[in-house]
Length: 434
Ligand code: EPZ
Image (cartoon, rainbow, N blue to C red; front, side, top):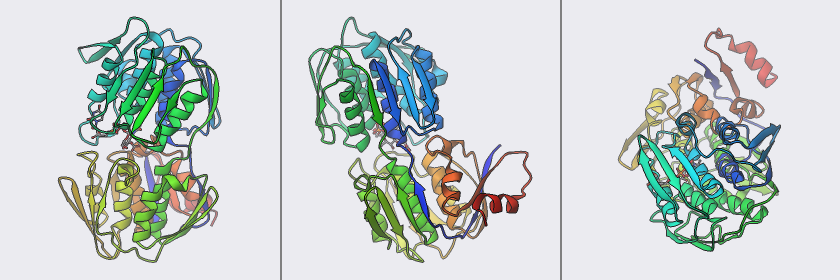
């Protein structure tokens, strides 16, 4: 089994170019089913985006990658069922539901996969499809959605600003007959990106970024070129890495205004930030200050996806930090792995308490999920000695070649295959050029 090997305790330096947003690219790829030819630039090469291309091809679309650009040709979509083994690969497979139903009048899906973060039902997604006119039946784990003719515009009130449910409803409504109003919509930058994508194909979505979306359905969507927004959670990860190692690094290709809740927390921990156009420089202190209370919330609140990364950086802060996780009920599994490195952490219900220790020590740990795995990388970079992180496939779902990005900033990190002997010194010399 593969693992990431990290020799911690080194300062990072220089710059990191931040990848395109995973959580922006995935709904855009799903929405490309709606019609026409979509050229999607700055599309990160991740396990999840490549799974999306597999789903597109399976549906009968053309889907080709040429470096950072992906081209989808949805002039024909002959299939409308997604096999369970593809659905299970990631959460955002469910976002194909709205697109396939709108395009084909029928969609057959099953429960999506994704990180184990506690219950992740799709009731809001299905209710939105039902309000738009779909008949939905479930049998033997499959969900059958059908609609004779076009979907019909409706008023959809979301009891919680679900990102996925907002995306599914927006996509399905974009070619429905008449107007759809989504009340209580999610406001993440990825929602605005999806609206921009649909509008660039001839759709009519307004209000993105607010909690009320208006979608006037159009007959069909055409061709477009799109550039994915930067990944704000990947950016948060590298900020946490700088914070955990007392480093100064510059992030290129970021949207600082997407990161304010994150930079505010790290500023409270003692980090300083300097913006210069699309570049953001973070300068961390020798030792962070604890942050007394951090509460995750839907955008523009502190992102749940940055929770684990921040805990990893605060594990060696001066004082006690408290994290309140309000979005997912099972998002503290990584804490037990941090404890193996000497972190003094515990959780009860929605709360995690991080009592800063003078230093962490390298250890063998295992990824529990995507952002939990990234948190172990952050902790290992700041720890004394060598760490081995197994199951890095979780990390590959959301980070494009994490070891290359961090090595470029001076981290001593490399990927070790199962049968490889542990001859890391040579590898580190090669990777970091020392
Ligand atoms: C998206 O997941 C992101 N994934 C997640 O990022 C992110 O953590 C989450 O939004 C919140 O920001 C992608 O965009 C691919 P939700 P999603 O629907 O859409 C409950 C990462 O690390 N809920 O906003 O699944 C749900 O259980 C991933 O990149 C229902 O009850 O999140 C959760 O408690 C992890 N019924 C809450 O709402 C539903 O029908 C928020 O979920 C849908 C959601």
